[in-house]
Image 1 (tube, rainbow, N blue to C red):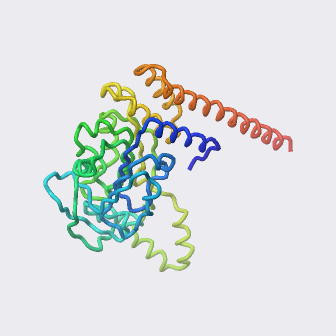
Image 2: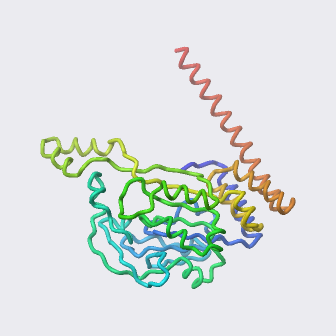
Image 3: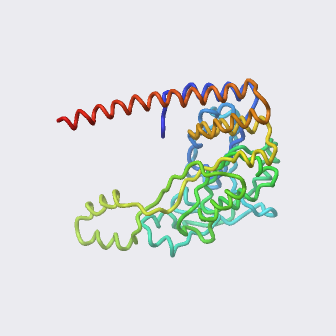
Length: 331
């Protein structure tokens, strides 16, 4: 993760603004079998966290002392409105469990196929996102992280239009290959989110080795199995899925007549994602909508200082690099 010496000061600014304005971001974590996203840490003590995961074999860390409020929902999230139970496939790896059945034919071409082996299937309690918002009396949802193993887009679209239109940031993990039958693939997710007023802020391509497991097993029988296994550990990775982050566009904010709270949170989220140029855009747009006030001065001053100091640090690093290269060339 990118770390900057100014991070502590930035966190102090986020906390001061959120505390003074009494703003409490609502963060949804669908597929919360591991820890909450690290990017939320700087604003955790001001935030409401809601985590979902019906497969708790990998227990997540206790978040009660991290977030202002924390809820763990031991249910599957579904877009089906009239059901309280849904079929769930428990796979060898808990992080691969899903309401969708693994596509064994497609997965057989990759070494990680065993992770998707269904150990058992059954019906689990289910809920919709709308129902959870209502039951917990949440004012809305500000940032959604969903790793639902194949249903990210449909779950987001299942939100009531008034709730969905106010989501400012969304993290998804759509596939590039057919790991599940009927899953939402990145090509479909990306186009739809652009149409809904988001822009792609970050894309991290992940993958595995394209090789049939039976082929690897046969190669191991030919001798030097340890060398073969070590070779696989450093083998070229084939793209299989992506970690994608989207932020709300300013045009979408304007069309929705967003309020001060939403612009403030979008600015905070942009800074957390290191999108300081966009954060400056948000700050100026805030001024256009609401005029100059203490919030706009803090937002613009913080971004200006960060970009100025980052430029100085980068200039110093570049000068040292050029000096070292010149010295090396002389030798």
